[in-house]
Length: 323
Image (tube, rainbow, N blue to C red; front, side, top):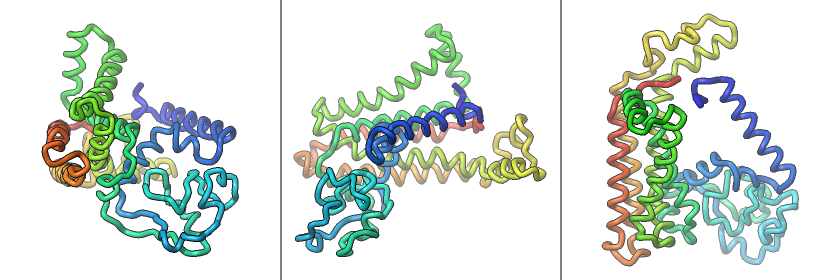
């Protein structure tokens, strides 16, 4: 629908999301919308599992404590309860915690602490891997890939070829591309796990570092390739002189608002992607004892190699800024 190029559509989308959040919050408790309905909440939850910080309780300090807000799920109505409907004394994952630190401030025993950690540990040792989290990790592979695909300089050629082959209009083509991008990684994940849901759930957690790296690398192009636009748009909003010619585009072409040259940005993107891939392979290696040995992890290695190869190709092909 061209949302990225339309202030009106962007505002409408934000308004709808905000309205939906307020409506759900009026019916259900606390952060129900963020936890169960919002795609951005799910995305942030997955990525938070690879965070370098965590909020965790100290078991011995909690022992014997009868504080209701930490003991019972139904204590969510208490004023000092967790806004994310968690029991702080049993907190073992980052995914359902948004680090509001309310529990840390209200804990009388000072049991909870915010500390640095190995960012791969939680992914490799998750107690109860969930197929929904793994499925989202696979879908995010496609989300990032289709974002990159739309920015390729050859995207127009690919669209014309697809139109000639299928006879579909632009909306039909985009629908096919998006659905394929979302479903293909799910199929690959299922194939690597040979249809075993428990194995697929574990495999999916290993995709999260690669997801995070690919997503960060994609947005690195926007941040470094369009960085000057932040000041230009702000200056125009304040009525100050600005070199931004709306709707004529950035002065100096598509990279006229860049903070770094295109080749430097490309090197940074590839480096970030390779670092993230190393993280995914490290998580897979740590999982091998849970899957029955080194041989059982080979299909996951193969899946990661395929997805890494796809992302390396997408990031190596020249891209054009859309905004």
